[in-house]
Amino acid sequence: VELVESGGGLAQSGGSLRLSCAASGNFFRINTMGWYRQAPGKEREMVGEVGRGGNTDYPDSVKGRFTVSRDNDKNLVHLQMNNLRPEDTAVYYCHADVEEVYRYEYEHWGQGTRVTVTS
Image 1 (cartoon, helix red, strand yellow):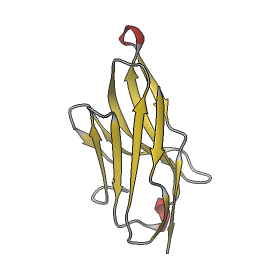
Image 2: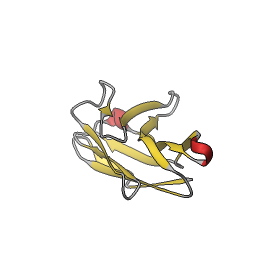
Image 3: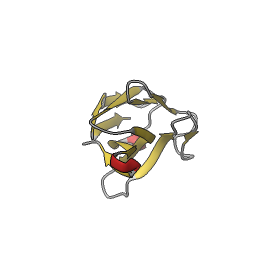
Image 4: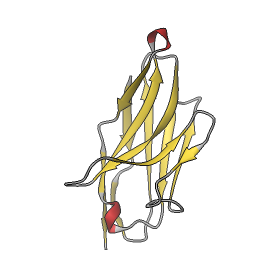
């Protein structure tokens, strides 16, 4: 299973960016998909997750600004980031819990895409 991210880059404070992640490979289905980020010197943190049925979860730091969505048919997950702040600067990672052989669930990560927000 491979997760490939796109859409990172540079934005000004108050601006927007949209990240996308495409999953490919041999698997039965994808359960939870989402996004994490890791800033220099900090631990990786979840910034948005969406279940297969569409239920979402966000930390308080991004609620009302970030929206995670998915397309189950195309195995895509997106992260719409609005009203960006300099503290959102980080490497963003796509994450997926994937049911594979014998329906065992495995955790997968993308390679990361850098987001830089300038003030």
